[in-house]
Length: 249
Image: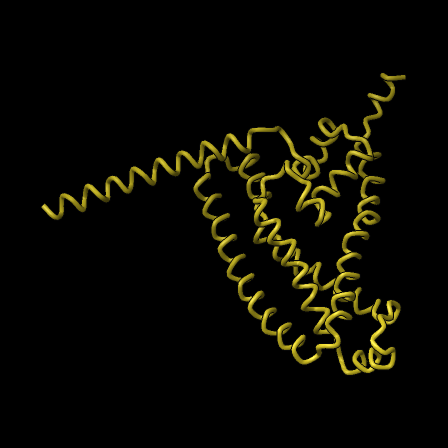
């Protein structure tokens, strides 16, 4: 009798798991087929396909790069992607926290002495190299975390290559997200301990450090507008079709 009840429970559980998997797959397929191409998909098209389907102007391509690469626009303004909005917001504030941590780690005895000589005033030119290093290191760490937390490319591969491997794609995404959150909780714990000790010991440096972090984070908002204006100068002419121009003439 006991074995029959356990077998029934197992069968019910297996059926519920199958229904859940089918439901997820239906939603997943519906979601991925909702629009033919989003910004990242269009930017990742192969050259021969892009020559036919990518008819965007320079400004449209430039805006697509900002929507997919600029951390502020990507987090709060990009809605046509396959990433979790919650994870994007989490990454945004985590990047700020990492920038905060790295900036604090660059505060050496010479930096403290300089602050003492300037009577606590913020010397932008002296802090500029430190802000630049913090920006570079934070960007590298953010890129590594994006590989784990953002799974849009996995979904694009599922759409274009392996539509029969839904369970494998879903398992890979779940594993990446699990590793992402484990690493992030470790980073947040280390960040909390280090910054807590730093601000407790150097109480008079807290405002100075905050200004340093705000300046460094501001650089990450401004530089993409210049960096991502360059690729379109090469991509748009390369994808232009001479035949269409002749027909138009």
